[in-house]
Length: 364
Image (cartoon, rainbow, N blue to C red):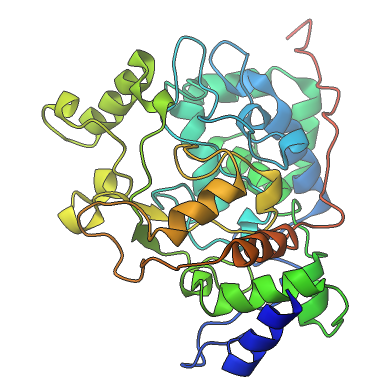
């Protein structure tokens, strides 16, 4: 191992910035950006926490935001495909909301530009939370504690219980689900002992031979762009109910004969541009060791499988990102790369206990 490390150093592979000076790794800022029309306040965060955990934001009162983005699973879901509204199956894996406040786009296909916009979409979706917005508002109005909390969070509005403020509160809460005390952050801030020798080798591979930094860069280890990598289908994608959900999404997007499309093509479903066929947003790698399985469809159970996939140069599909080439990593290099990926885990991953939710008013 020492010989390999010294060889890499001699080759000049170690660098936190590539030769063009643009792609680099950075410590995560202490506070994420926030929109001007929704500044974070304690009252909004507290309201958002209650709403995040409240299953009454779903049609049958069974599903909350926390159902698919669970604190115990590092704010993702450790199952192949996301949970769905009862009687349905989802067709994509649940990404974590941990540090999602730093993303410039949300969802695997990037269809939401903000956490506010993201929070709004699942509520109405018939295979996610399946609740009409007007019915949701009437439910919230029938709970005195929520009437008080909305008034406190949005004191300048005469009728603060509305969809806009509901998603603003949820987004404000999600912006507090952040952590930046990983060994990598400490290393980048000057603590050269924060990484082990194996992790340092993994870092050199990440920024050099393995080329991971080409897409996983910046403070949140994502370029927030879309790439075709050729991830194979997961068995769960061939379930009848999963196919039905995918067909529904295609019909809503204006596709004819959706049954002829046998897999999830990601951003293509949104743009209908053939160049986007099979393109998905680069996920953050922060806390990646805590959020298996991996990829948009949960196709890979372990980090070892992910590394093997990229070591082979990705999948065999048309329009694959030309940067994906066989890496020819040795066994020692693969282990070092995985060790580095584990160094992206926060020491203190935020955890929030589900609050005691208020009942409907008996005399409403």
